[in-house]
Image (cartoon, rainbow, N blue to C red; front, side, top):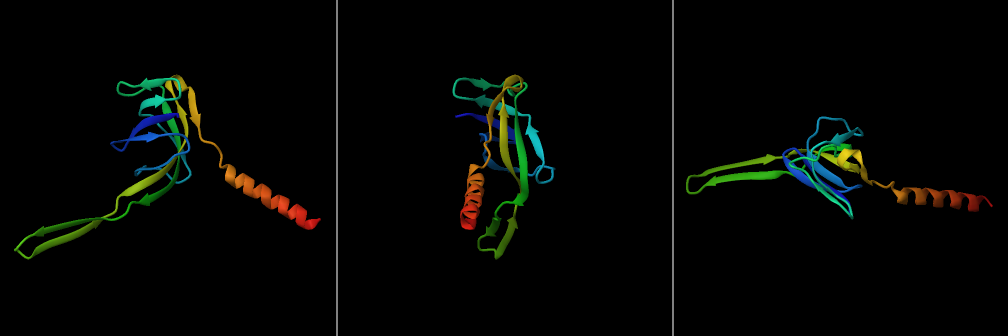
Length: 135
């Protein structure tokens, strides 16, 4: 199994091709492709590359699907026997990202996301159904 460990927004994520992840908000529009340059580790079935701290030349290509917000987190503070309570809510802004390709050291392609074959098969079935209906 080919995967990489990337760093973005102060966190580390283990990603493989065709994964969809939620990361801290990125300053781009939906549908835009970009690269994660901070790659800490890459591996495929035969070799593993570990950076110190980053791997030179390795990057992960991704597409920004949409900007969203996480579920609400409730912050409730209470001081007992003092009739003091405070309730606040917070929703963190996040970006939903799809991983397209993983490149190893010196730009070698390690993994690539496959096209959605389910959509192709369903469209082919619809075409065949129309053809048989006309006969």
